[in-house]
Image 1: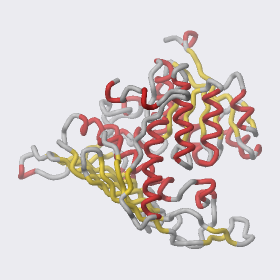
Image 2: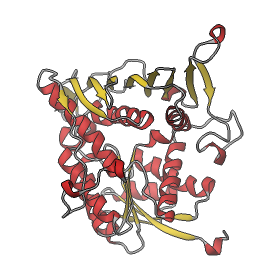
Image 3: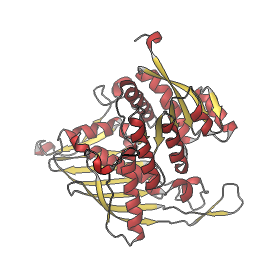
Image 4: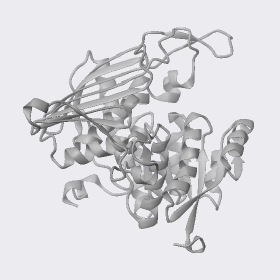
Length: 403
């Protein structure tokens, strides 16, 4: 397709910090490396701190800066709204954008509460009928090794899933003198390690296995109750969990264990998942993100054991757009894969994944864990009620499996 024939789409992004930077390079590199038929234009960047937003806009070539997200959503040249803000703002921005006919990409977790996530999923289903697409940013799905793991499970390479062990371990809060931030305030973040990083472990488990978490028994702990304020004016109260540990059942009965903590001393970004099946197993660790460990019972006994597969071959998911085999990819590449997939879905009129309904499913698991922990770890069933567009009864909807 020649440059003159290409269509473009105007991107407006709300947020300019860590995730804003990651998404900015994702849009830019998706355009350069994947060369999608629908080309992203970085139209406007939104942020309340004009100076900080202008600096990121300068570095990543955003065309304009808006200090009110409503003004950004209202712009005629913004056709897709990318939400990279704290969780307490997700629902309001996403629903407004969808109702304005704008496609939406929203960072995870989808919202701070199940009620907010349900409102977002309902708005997304309503907008979908008009061709408006939405996606939640569980970016680790798009690590090539993770995408390969899903394919291998779907192909039956490890047989029936029997058990899962998933954990996300960080240590950036292990120092009790680390300052307060919005991620430690329940009103802004929704939850602590559970929602911030545990959400990823839940989503990857459901994504790779194709199974849903149906019930949980959980424990949550806050190890440091107060922290110094960043401006030195005193201390602030931590109102979220520092650690979450829970047992779960998956569809069909397979057990799963989950750990999410930002106090795992010595672990920087260890998102790990191991899936044991009737005929083999898979293991992945984000700190070794270009590798997938595969065990197959069919391997002759004298060489049987986990094989480290370097996922850098051009036939592996996403890899052909990048470098020759053995030239490793990093954390930032998943955001380019995410952007490219969303652009392709919009261009071809397909529903991107993970959807807001997928984000809601994770939110319901998080809520069940919190409810269980508050009730002395009582077994708590996860709500799986389907989402219907506004004005449509859930009872009248055709089951997802029948479509």
